[in-house]
Amino acid sequence: MKNFLNKIIFSKTAISKVTSNKKSLKKILSLSCFTIAYLCWGISSAAAAQFESSHQSGTVAFSGQHAGMDFEGKFERWQATLVLPPQKDPSIVATFYMTSAKTGDSIYDSTLPEFDWFDIENHRIGKFVSTEIVMTEGGYQVSGELTIKAIAKAVSFLLTDNQDNLTTSFGINRLDYKIGLESDPDAEWVDKTISISMTLDK
Amino acid sequence: MQRYHSFSIVLHWCIALALLFMFASGLYMVNADISKADQYQLFQIHKASGVVVLWALILRVGTRVLTQAPALPDSLNQQQVFKAKLGHMFLYAALITMPLSGWLMVSASPFGLPTFVFVDWIKWPHVPGVARNKTIEVLANNIHWITATVLATSIVGHIGAVVWHKKKHNINLVSRMWWNKDEKFSE
Image (tube, rainbow over all chains, first blue to last red; front, side, top):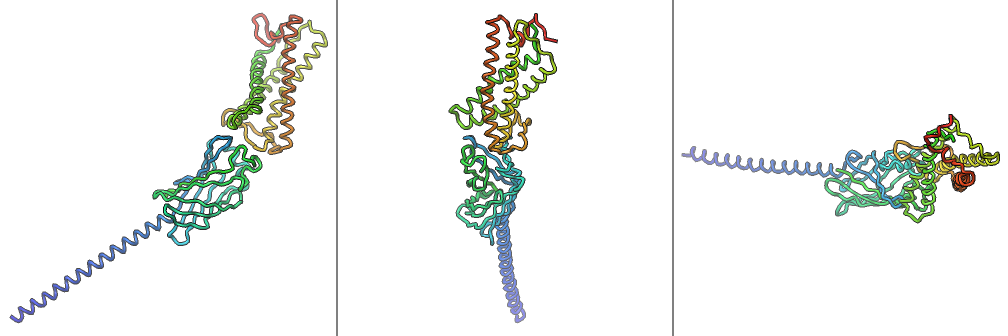
């Protein structure tokens, strides 16, 4: 009888130990799953906030008016590296090849490379380097320096986050960069303000 | 009366029509109250047409040199022959100077816009060494306008002489520059 009672007591203890172990295992499994999920989320959000973009996946375009007629062109070669908040040290560095600017109009495309316009013989590359990126409700407020023809000017724009891509549009004064300064300093034919628009696919 | 070579006749009348267009478009694009867009488009058409006229003139002069021009009517006196030759010299000189001065003006223009001859694959080059040269542009512009006046006067004289000889001496000079079944090309 005593033996029988001992068996019962011991078996109860054993059952209770097994039950306790199962609970611990569940806790461990739950914790692991949570950790893995957290890591995955972290990695994915990091990937979304830091990426490379180029002419193969996005667009850098320019537009304005010449003789009262709208014109539009784009850079067929460019690349950008974006590190966006909340990443540490956010930055945007974009390089665009002035030689690749095309409008589809043979007169414009023949004139743009010339000395007074893009002067591609001496300045083949334009560059944007950010100085500050602040996260906003719909995207990022970006400030930085745009360099064209070796002239750097401060620019600021709102980079809108559309989930799949980032878009922006802002104007520059072409005369600030000595673009067409000799040909049309009074903007009699070509607008002073040239609109730059970008679509960067994530 | 003998006539000019058929190719010369074709070129003569084509150039005459082209000159009418060049005078009209040139005066209109500079003086008319039109939009910048229309003015710009008209400038490009005027430039492209100018290149075509220049080539037509080169062919015209080439044909004139390589073929025999019909002799002037015997009834013309020596003084009239001299005047006719002088008039034609002025005419040819002005005709050639017009597109050349226009070409120089476009080449020296601060805009530096290229000239496409109606299609993207015919790009007429600029005169080398004058790019964005304001002095040369102004000089070429003045030559273009003065020559236009000289040319217009020469054309009026040219047509006037034809009409005058017809009325005064009953000489039909137009038949030298048109086809007639009874009159053949001067061999």
